[in-house]
Length: 176
Image (cartoon, rainbow, N blue to C red; front, side):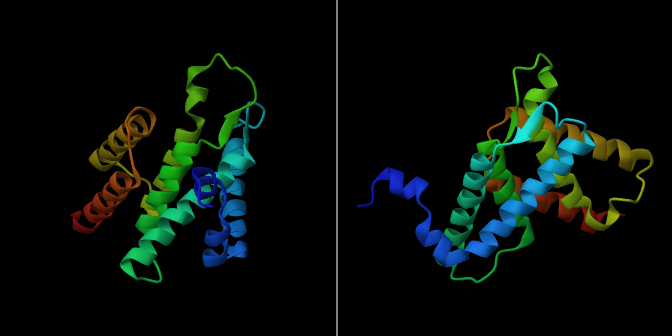
């Protein structure tokens, strides 16, 4: 019996293909990143990690990646694709939840803010501790503001996030 509930709720075949330890490790890693984000931003009193939403986001991510691997007959996908699909599913499932109704509108976008910081860290990797000055700083700040706006208000999918990350990496390569 392959009804829609089995297709989208039960992940037995996926767990067999990917491995339970791999999945549990990714859930634990991202959960810890979210807890650290909440603590660093002093938000642990207003928000929490909804573990079921996070688990479904990670399972959906692995499901998409496994389909790509099967279709393209490859063993591994590149790190940009990984980050894009993770971001898409975390944005869609919104595992960071508010504990109660809050009047501060900025807190409505706690998932988007988390994902913005996560993507920024990924994009800058080794340059994260290098201070940006002048036009480079202004351009990057404008880029981040646009990205944050995009995460909050635009319909985005994994492919558009992937393209944005590829474009950013390409810009780093040709930068003079």
